[in-house]
Image: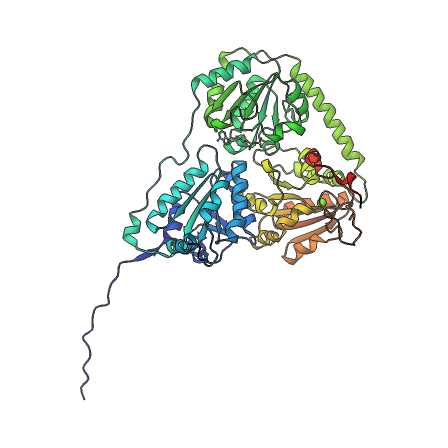
Length: 578
Ligand code: ADP
Ligand code: MG
């Protein structure tokens, strides 16, 4: 029997299609974003694969907050925002803490979070991981946008980027709904959506009369000082600052993360003379530093007569806490160039005794500090100063290692002990004085710069981010984590006044072996009890350019409550009767 075959029909042809996720990855690449830190799940998993396949580096974390700290540090160190990718609801909220912290610190970053379908959220009907994330984010970030349609993605990404880097940098939130991520478009239509944005971070030169006013005030000063903040480190104006200091002879004082913008041990460094500057300087030039709590109250008191020149990009920062005699509003690069061009037209009036008096004071203070380290050099078990005496020469011999630092005593004492000589090589808990940035910032610093990183962590501080040590190992990053273990928050000698046998609120684990945690993830790990062992381990770990963990055994009674900011802690314990 003859079979009748159906006439062969041509295969149907459909136009090539792309999803919202393709468009998002392409839009991010278009603005130059090359790194994404995050923790995936519904609805962003496929997006992470697509972005990775398109050449955006994806660094997967164990906690969103740390991924966010990494993105923030990446933005601070490179000036180019990285993306923090989070899932909806809790993942979004965990990441938002880091985006908020970035905003407080003026670091650019973009948090992109998947979010649920709009309708059940707007009608409050209850849906998978349902949360009105856009409105939750708004009060905490510099800018927040939601994108509902794939056609809007390229515009949304450009807006988010501009918001993150322009003016005062900060954290930006971009909410991308599940339907938008999964939406399908014809590829040819999608192609038409993309454009090369022009001048993503425009310069903002200051007004010439503001520069003249500032130059005249600086030139009139008898006892001037330049106060350098992390805004100057971010703006990469170390070359202009060097010229400013060398041509005027004005001494400088760096804020914590501005250490190294100019060398801490340079001849005009007044690092050890903070209180003298606050009490005696007649004109202080603030370069990318805010007159916030870190420069007032328990941190010293300015003389009522001190006049300020303030170079900042944010107009509302001016007169924020103190009247500013000469505001220079503009980007630091433009402002310093303008000031350097203007100053030669003025005659400086500096008191010839000012710099020598600061230098003499520096010498005395440095000798005192060295004596303190020497006096503790043999303490057994070690205290913070014993350990820092061992670390100091190793880190100072490796100036290109980025130092990440958090804790209470561990933060304050490390900042005081370790001199920095290169800009953007110190990353710490910054303006909010938070805990829980260590592993994320170390990872962000290593990924963004390719440099070696040493994170000096209090044991309590490490606890907030410790699990992301595994991320350091998985990505084989050249990061050494040094844990100062005194077994507690502040120290390990807290007493439970109830006598019920529970640990005191500040008590942690003085006998914990953090080196075993390092071993668990394949890092070279050390447990050290003497300064020599510590110095040897740190040298070896830095040289290895591989993940390393050093558990430094300190005495439980090393360290005091709240470190250097005990004055902020209301004291009530002595009034307690049990
Ligand atoms: P620190 O904690 O080191 O004192 P702050 O974070 O308090 O520094 O201050 C940094 C300041 O630098 C902020 O007021 C911010 O507006 C400013 N800033 C950041 N980037 C720039 C820039 N490119 N040009 C001018 N000012 C900047
Ligand atoms: Mg501790």
